Image (cartoon, rainbow, N blue to C red):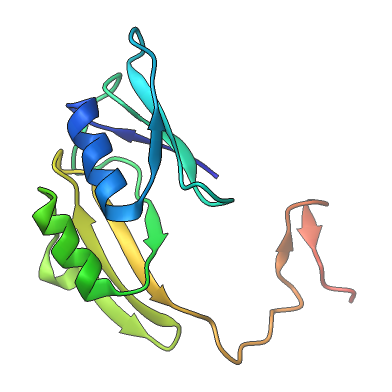
Length: 134
């Protein structure tokens, strides 16, 4: 996965996402964006000032260990929470929608899928069809 997050200030955005998720950033002096990595096999992408930041940008959801602690940390780092109805819980976990200092919305999720069997008719992106043997 590669994600591009529009921001107004590269340094402030890098501090926010590094402080919240531990992402590492690399940048060049002339670039309109900085690349990031989670340090593992997780998300990679870039923050950019090359397009407008704000409410309707790309929605990214990041897995976290603790929804409440991550929300508190986002607020400490200059972000915040989205509307109250942007939080939920289901049989697979709980989630919330936060905002970064530029107003970009992103999701956080904690949980795991338990006891569900995969649908044998699920889409197989490798061959453009379903895995259904029928």
